[in-house]
Length: 126
Ligand code: SF4
Ligand code: SF4
Image 1 (spheres, helix red, strand yellow):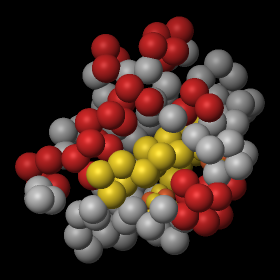
Image 2 (cartoon, protein in one colour; image 1 turned 180 degrees about the horizontal axis):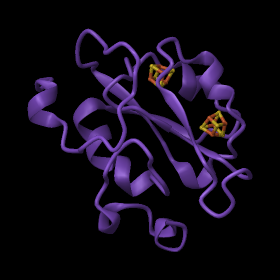
Image 3 (cartoon, helix red, strand yellow; image 1 turned 120 degrees about the vertical axis):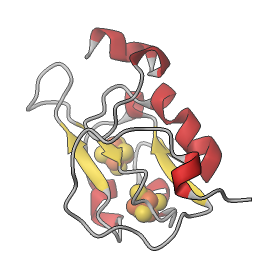
Image 4 (cartoon, protein in one colour; image 1 turned 30 degrees about the vertical axis):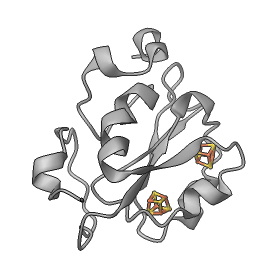
């Protein structure tokens, strides 16, 4: 059963994103395993709701950028996962995806993830 987003979504937003909200919680969400992301930005071109944001490179802001998904706006269409050339985006059932997101995230500008739950690489890259 899909829970209402207010019950299921555990993270606080770090930034306000001035884009239209989605109509309803999707069955699935995409989550990027950022450790494998090259910052090629191919996924951004395919996202129909423009919910993939660029994250400045953790070590050098202008190089080796990452991207992250605004989990509250992803509609679960799967296009980014299908076309990521580095196969570093996976589709998850909504509840599982929001729970696993920090452990796959090196750096987030959108969400206030608990650092202890983030990918271990985040420790040296925060
Ligand atoms: S397409 Fe894949 S590798 Fe390229 S920016 Fe998106 S997640 Fe990263
Ligand atoms: S699954 Fe669809 S809506 Fe969600 S981030 Fe990927 S392309 Fe965008």
